[in-house]
Image (cartoon, rainbow, N blue to C red; front, top):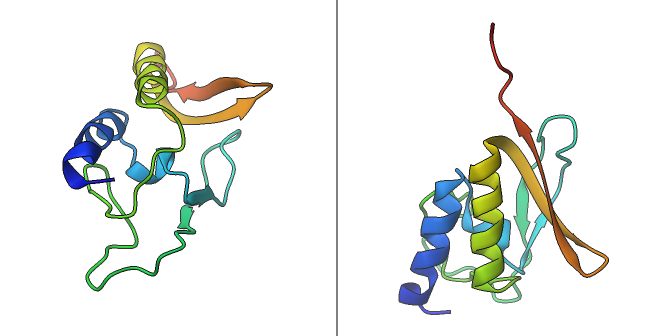
Length: 110
């Protein structure tokens, strides 16, 4: 995918303090997110990285090897749910042909 085509994915993932790896078909999450998110994304791109490639992305960073795992509309829906629900820790996955979004809200202080 060309750089100008990736820009919308960079913007959307940044809105939820995420990285492109969150929606890339070549990345695999190595942890869990049900009692606090611990882990990292591991890239399994079939082409070796080019010199200067940043392996640990940060929100807003682009990646030459990004290929979306799901359609852009689904990414936008996931981001919308996370923002609408105020999730700070979140995860999405496919189950029974549907996309599921799970998250944790910040604790309300009294």
